[in-house]
Image (cartoon, rainbow, N blue to C red; front, side, top):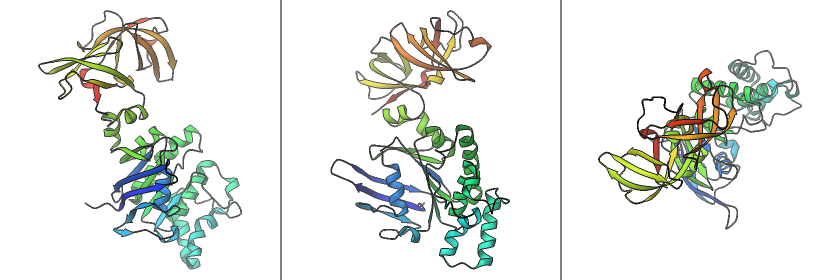
Length: 360
């Protein structure tokens, strides 16, 4: 199936040393697709090329099978929601939403009808006559979304629209934005540096680093099966350990880390004698008191707690396994974990299925 949005070999050169691309990806109709990466990775430049605010040095952008090369932003059938919302401070909520319709010479009855629909859609029906300065951050964001939607674009573009909101409101708006996109069935491309945001909102994610795509996949694929050490480290917390393959016996592969921690995982092909990078997610460890029985027999070892960070429902531990191997461990806060304090010895276990070898 052909994507509604197609980005083919998109490259943007700012200088011989600074280049974004070449990037190629497709976004399906009705899909919520995120461009995720650290500052300077090229995600906003890519979005601006799609929107028409930047011209690619090479490559092309197609929407609905039609090339957008050379078209100005207002002729691309896209709606863009900015990080700063970009509302006109001297216009009311109604007039901000109606601005694009008036530029298109829409009649007053049509403007009133469509703006009214948008106000209902974003749950602001009683705020039409207010000015942006009289609105909260979340309300301003809804107005910016309504202003983009009122023109009925084929594609919605979001440039970090939640980054200016406080954490609690950001989480609330995350749910509202996803629900709105699903109800309307709009295709959306969303730029963010927030891994949690991308995982919560997206159908698929493209992880970018230094102007290149590291991996494209569903949130589950990106988190559970990262394609590189960069993706593993950037998405969530991680323990990345350098290890050597000691041997393979039957259905198992045995590895030893640089600090002497021996781990077993299901047999992996083509790694005999190799040096590899292992990924162990902090939340996959099981913690027990010394000598306490546990279901996991393999990959059990002692560790000493160096530091405990209280996060409310979770505890984040920094431990030393075998007094040498630093590890991050995340556990749920409960009555049984109150005895876990710095200096205490604990026993850790991790299922062999939860140890991953990164190929690059």
